[in-house]
Amino acid sequence: MQRNKKEFEIKDLIIKAKSGKINNVEKKYVIEMIKQEDDDLYQYLYIIGRSNLTVYEHLFAKYLEYYQDPEIIRLSLQVLCHFWRKTEKYLSYVVAYANENEWDIIGNVRSMAIDIIGNLLKNKKQYANKEKRMIKLLLTWFKDESVDIDIREDCYLALGKAFGKKPLQELPFAGKHFDLKKDIDMKIIEWAEKL
Image (cartoon, rainbow, N blue to C red; front, side, top):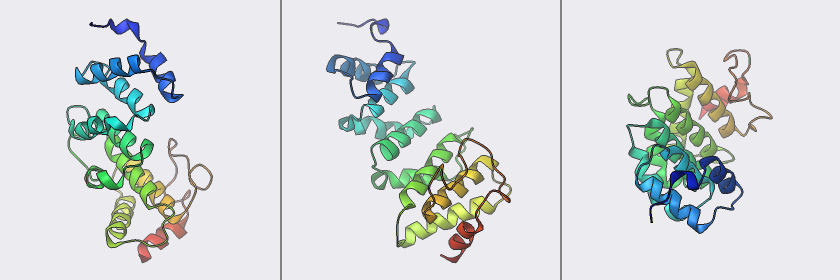
């Protein structure tokens, strides 16, 4: 039986997903809309991601290469790495997308990937060579004044997390621009330079 899209309002499904109250009928409906690549694909993927339905990991993995819509890629990274904590499994995508990509016009995918790297590196006492390379890459982008200011800010915040600073408490707020000379802790930069 084909369901009418209005049978389930997206905003209601999102609220239920965040509280873990999405039922099986709603879940099946959302999955069907994802398979059809409905116009509201982003919202339907978000619903599954927030519902913590990790059995659908394969859907998000598939959308890591959905280059016609970078926001879908960004959401897939967010779900797989932030919500579901599977960064190690998708690290090759994270590192690739932390670099500048032609299809990521606004830079939101890059920004998400850099944030994921910061989260991956935080609270580690020792760094393997690949992790040291990621820190050096973040430092290089942070220092490069030809890099977009938002990306440089993201790099500083990721370095700060790796250094052990607490977001929102010891680092500038990510959604607000800050002065990359005055509003930074030079200990973070010096630490990264010494690695």
